[in-house]
Length: 257
Image (cartoon, rainbow, N blue to C red; front, side):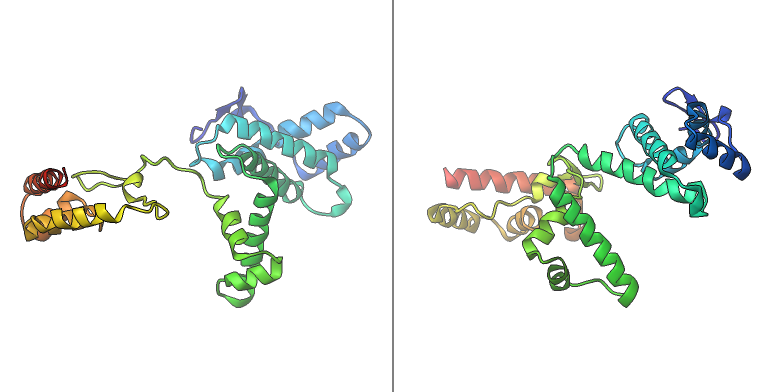
């Protein structure tokens, strides 16, 4: 979207009309009488409202054209259900409906399918947490949430996790100019039961390394530090750290064979 002029789904926002409060009221009265032309004019005259809501989703990877179309569905629902006797501005009534329609679309079209009941529980948790924080000025405890919603801690954890966007195992999580650390470098399968004899063999192999090589392997593969961080710590170059790391791994391989 441009800064002053937006072209989205064939709609040029610089050409969109807007209506005064009196004009909006007259159009709504005609809509109630079944005037479809007045309904179309109301839709066209409130498209800027949809676009203003889309600004909240600029940083997402979702297709803004799709979100615009979904937002228009929410706008039309708001027009069909708006009651002039509410004595509120149409925008006040329409924004939650448009926003809700967009959020439901995003929720139901994630790359990982999550059950509707789990997502609904997640939103109940968020609402309850907000209410608790506004009342007491602190975060609600897990036990409080479990008691109020009559669910287990496991269900709370699963529900909140369902709101997180999935990321690739190859997502770079750290890079300081040296070796890049990826997410898969930090993943450990704690369910795997390693052969005890292999652990003993590895321990014996590490015994033959000098103290600096042991330190580098420990910092790299246990602590997750980059070669540049270790180089700064040992006051040597990154290239030296790389050579020492390769030499240590080579020595381990020789002993383990």
